[in-house]
Amino acid sequence: MSYKLLEGKKGIIFGALDSKSIAWKTAESVYENGGQVVLTNAPIAMRMGAINELGEKINAPIIPADATSIDDLNELISKSEAHFGDKIDFVLHSIGMSVNVRKGKHYTDLNYDWLQKGWDVSAVSFHKLMQTLYKNDSMKEGGSIVALSYIAAQRTFPNYNDMADNKAYLESIARSFGYFFGKNKKVRVNTISQSPTPTTAGQGVKGLDAFLEYAEKTSPLGNATAKDCADYIVALFSDLTRKITLQNLYNDGGFSNVGISEEVMEYFNNL
Ligand SMILES: NC(=O)c1ccc[n+]([C@@H]2O[C@H](COP(=O)([O-])OP(=O)(O)OC[C@H]3O[C@@H](n4cnc5c(N)ncnc54)[C@H](O)[C@@H]3O)[C@@H](O)[C@H]2O)c1
Image (cartoon, rainbow, N blue to C red; front, side):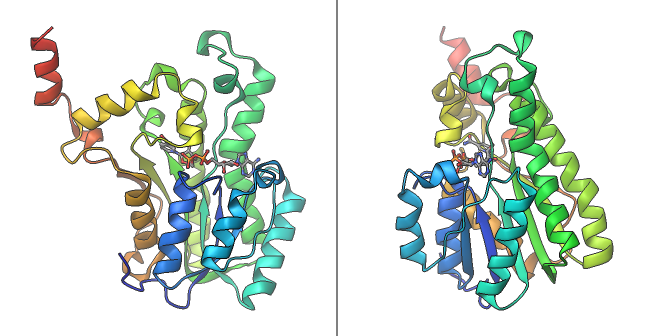
């Protein structure tokens, strides 16, 4: 769907790893809507090469940056501004990683070095990114910054492990930094709380298939796909959502407000 909502707008998209990534779908939707993009990912993710394909398709330069490194972020932002010849209208933080999840460490037996690494990558990097943008005065007035979250920040999903705590921290950073970005730079900051989605990061969560099915059967509209999320992000980057800020917005087919669905009742009735 292209409404050309982002005609003339320029921004940075973090986290396109492969064609399943929410960031990948977002970059495509932004491009279809007339926006210009700089793509970035951790240098290690670049080695897989898929991002080059996306860069060619949407005519976007690729600038590697580890989102936990202030030096990398400064360089990324100054190179992006030089490329656009302008300040930045929108930024997507689509980054998540837990070493404890990756290595199968249980929440009651966490390794705290791994916890700190995952917290830095998944949550603190959002503060580092916004602080770098803020100090360099790189965002245009009316701009929009979005990060991606999950409902495990509010409710317990045991297999989500320490990522639940990282998402709670991420959402809090969005509100805390969003206040100053709103007051002093007239920039919006929001998080989108997305349905479980079959991506590389999503697949790290133990039992994702059961997760996906349960959420699908609970949500009146079914799970939101990566493409649905991309379209919502385009709306949040556009001028149609000028007064929405400091929010955690659910893109989940209604999951977050359902106690139990008829389908889930039926499943237990038939046991
Ligand atoms: N997949 C889901 O079920 C789901 C649900 C809700 C929210 N989310 C969130 O959506 C976002 C995107 O994840 P996805 O599902 O598209 O998976 P993905 O694996 O495609 O994307 C995660 C990205 O994070 C990048 N990354 C990791 N460490 C980094 C670093 N140090 N610097 C820069 N980038 C780094 C990876 O290279 C990758 O591109 C994440 O924040 C994730 O937690 C995902």
